[in-house]
Image (cartoon, rainbow, N blue to C red; front, top):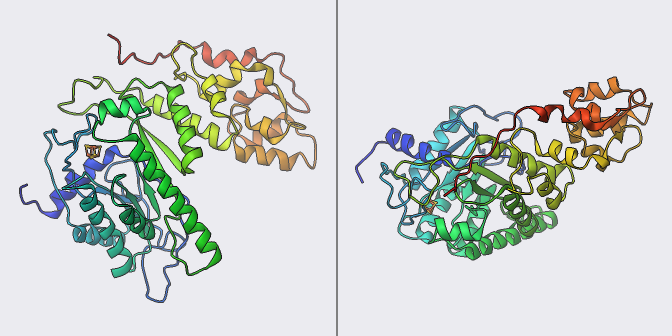
Length: 414
Ligand code: SF4
């Protein structure tokens, strides 16, 4: 590998990290910058920094790879062994110094670190852990750290990673086991899920220990997340919703991220030539919210998909698609309906529903009262009954879908 200066390495390794979507910094423990030993980078109060985005997706974390060299050859990955890309590698110390200097310049509030696999899974994981250890122990760094972990690394290394990181993640990569076997044959679904199970126990034990003893060392307080690539294999949206729901239940994930597959240079012939519509990724995030915040069961979300193709509609959001399919559940009376029924109304979010429930304690709500709590009353009207409003028919709601339908492209057609 040619000798590169830090800036050249940064250009390569920040760009290479842009394919990873799983970098939100929600749910972390709050640390105080004013500790005994000083410390920098608290994620609350003064010192929170925003707006540095080397890759455009994650605006407040330095998001880089330790290296884009890899001994694996996953078909969908630009960093795979057989890929003809320029390679670079940071030392652990270089990543530490970059993180500190970017933080001091207010570019970032933390670090998201992933890596290709060099030499072995254990060796790579040791380097990743060393970055987090040095930031925390040698430099008193209190900022957010998200480490991407390697499923077949020694469990002791995963344990150490959890001691220093706020969040850990392991990518399931593809929505189906068959897809993983076909596109990443060196990876094992059983190993990935085994490691996710171990992280779940570590996180639960860590939470339990810190509840009992304040000084107990925490373990990944912001939990674990994962990422699925969408559109690289033939998995339908229905398959993806079902897999995400299983992962949430089994491993208590904080987030499942969906990343639309991007065709890569010199791509393998087993991959589709076109990327899926970005709207597909968006619809999957909306379906994820339906399960996590709106009380829909996975089967109900899947029912919003086209029965023939298993795909969610692209032209309307899945909550509206569900409502149009199950019109008998509407209209819902804003003055009497329980919270769960209100949450199913297209266009009503949890905040608006809570506002309705609070306001109706004092008086019967009219349509204009609901309008004040929401962004657009037009979308809601066909689904609601208010003191001064009763829709004649839910057919009004079909208006938005009267536009020509956008079809998902058939990526795997013969
Ligand atoms: S192991 Fe990770 S970095 Fe290596 S080829 Fe597979 S997806 Fe890419």
